[in-house]
Structure formats: C-alpha cells, structure tokens
Image (cartoon, rainbow, N blue to C red; front, top):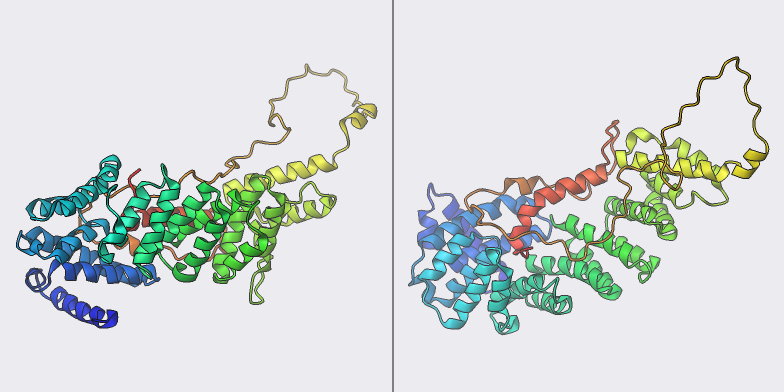
Length: 456
C-alpha cells in the first residue's frame, strides 16, 4: 500500500476512534502496529514543521499506551505488534507500559534481547542497554525497527565511540529518510562532528538539516550545535561555505545565527570571524538591512576596537542604545568603551613627565586609598562575558522517566518559532535571542524525548 493511502486510512481510523466517548473503539478496532504507525506519521509531520500536529501526537501517545496496556500474548504473536511495542517505547512512550507488555509477550530470544536493551535505555541504564544491543545490527532488522535501533545505539555511543556513533546515525538516516528519525540523526551528527573536528561532515550534515528540517520544533537545538561548531571549526570552514549554508535560511533566522556567531567570536577573540558575522547580520537580505540593530553594532565594534580607526569605533559605540541590550551585552559595551579609552589615552610615561599642576588647598585631608574597580588588565569587570566553548558532546536530553502518556504535551505546541523577531521596540532589557533560545530549550526538552534521547 502506498504511503499516502496508508496515511489516509490510518488517519480515518484514528479520527473515528477519537470521536468516541471512550477509547474502547480504538482498542477494539486498531491493532498496536496501526496506532504506532499513525504516531510515526504525525511525528514526521512535526519534523517537517507542522507544529499544529503536536496535540495529535499527545493524543496518539495516550491511545497507544491504553491499547498496549490491554494487549495480551495473543496480540504479540503478530511480529508487527511486537516491533510496534519497541518503536512506541523509542518514540517517547511510557517505559512502564513497555516493560509490562514485554513480560506478557512470547517472543524469540533475539527479540527479547532487543527489548531488554530498549527497556534499559528508556529507564536510564545506558550500560545495560549498550551491552544488550551491542550484537544487534540495525541493518538486518525491518526498517521500522532498525531505524530506531540505529538512532538509539548511535546516541548511546556518542561520547565513548563517536566514530561508531556517526556510522550508526548514517544508517538511521538511510533506513528512515524524511522522518523524525532522520531529523534527530542529522541534528546529532552535527554535534558529534564538532567533537571529532570533522569540518566536512559538520558542513554536510548542517546543509542537509537546513534543507530538510529548518522548521522542525527542534531546530533551536540544531542552532546551538551549529553556532558552537562554527566557533570550534572556524579555521577549517570557509566563510563562503558558511554563507552557502545560511543562505538557505529565511532572513530572520540567518540574522539571529550571525548575531550569535559574532557575539561568541568577539568574546573568544576571533576578530575576523566576528567582523564577518557582524557584517552579514547588518547586511540583511531582500533589501532589508539590520544596520540599526544595537547588537550588530556592538559585535562589529568589538572586532575593530583596537584598530587604527578607533575614533570611528568610539563614535559607533556612543550611538548604541544601551536600553536595547541585555545585561551581558551592556557589560560588553562597557568593556569595549574602556578598551577604546585606553587606546587613545596618553602614555603613562608622558603623563608622569607632564604632571598637571597640583591644586592649592589650605589643609589637605589625609589621602584615602581608592577601592580598585578594575581587574589585572585594567578593565572593568565584565558580567557574564565568559568564553562560550562548544560542548564536548552533542546536546542530548536525559531519557524519559516513565512519562505519563495520558498527559497531553501542550507545552510543546507553544514553542517559539526560530523566526520570532530578534529585537523589541520596547525598552525590555532582556536579549531577545538569548531569552528565546532559553525558553525554547526548556519547552522542547520534553518533546525531544519522543526521539529517544540518550541517557546522560
């Protein structure tokens, strides 16, 4: 049966079951593999950017959980239903339901070994999961199960065996193209490529992700890995390649990415990269420039603050609206102005040779020692201006601790789109980029459990 026809049939059955006052019809009419297949189709729509499908995902998880709790040994004699049970678990299902259903299933030792590995993985026991799944070759399994097994094994091995993990993630993409599994595999490949120092793989995976999953609700996690990768691999990735990747984004996403790169590059002292990213952020696209964005002005100034055009830089810094900067960026502005002041200040020896006339006072008070307000470098303290190094491993959420499948994941549906405006017309001092990324990470941690994220 073609995919489109299968989708229509399963959607019709789902709507019929959901319209009933109880789940009885769903349990009587739909087999577990049909419900799980419906869940996968909805998750694939979410990966493609259909955020409105998230409530349906929550409903399907609830219905599938009820069906599997009621399933007996006779149901699991059909291999499709047993595989569906395991896929359900790796799609964000309830580990308690999976473990209870496996105990009722009469299956061959190999399938039970896979189930043991999946249960260990879901319950946060990575050592047990790796040991059980080590002899399992995902490529020899039916594609619906094999794709998830490759994703799980790749996630488990990401830290200890990154090269093997990348191969497994490639298998996951091969077995399940155009799905949430591929989205997760690409996103995790980006992070692992950074730890491996593999600029070519990083660029390829990033290109594929932007082409296919730019509007996924998990795209903010990709953005984190992408920005960290550009910083870590800046000596190996040309500016032309970086521009090629970002040109596939919409203008607002491209601007935010370049602002984040410019900020981190400026803090880490990468003047060339900071200047390039700032210029691209200011340049904009389609005739819409961002030259008035105070962050772009600040980061570009940081990259040229010690240049021979220091007076121009000082003038630019004075024009920046402090009220539109975050606390951390205001501290960066203070530091930049202090550095610029040091550059144009007269040499200390000259000041000593030509002391200013001492004021005549009748009775000077005893001199009080000044409280130092600068660090060893003569700069004021910079709150929050610390080097933002890339993580040593891809950002992987902890495995779900027996989530309540009956609780709809409504928070996920409120995730901010990556295209949300990066600046505010009000005097809000919160950096919109940082705030949006923080909120998005919080909201999508739960959603990412649907991908079977590796336990920490």
